[in-house]
Image (cartoon, rainbow, N blue to C red):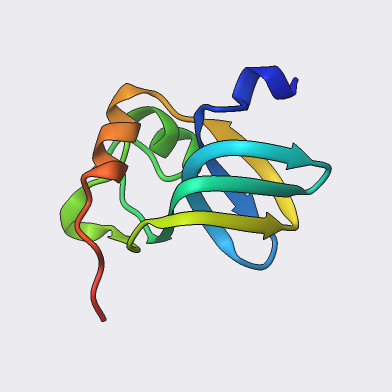
Length: 101
């Protein structure tokens, strides 16, 4: 299963640290290493759905989503879900402005 998602853009849901987007570098049980990672603090699909499944396909609506600045690398523990992302989703998350308080 790992070969399907290693080196791909993914969404990762963690029990304690929320939702992250990035390139999956490594995966061991419930711990992952992402590069070029951004945390999705709040998200809106713009009417295409409400879950991360829709985000992975359709992406986010910039005006009503909050996404953090990119991190070069992050290790995330307590991962319960890894969702491969697709074209539009990748484009909208990568081009989102950095959310400000």
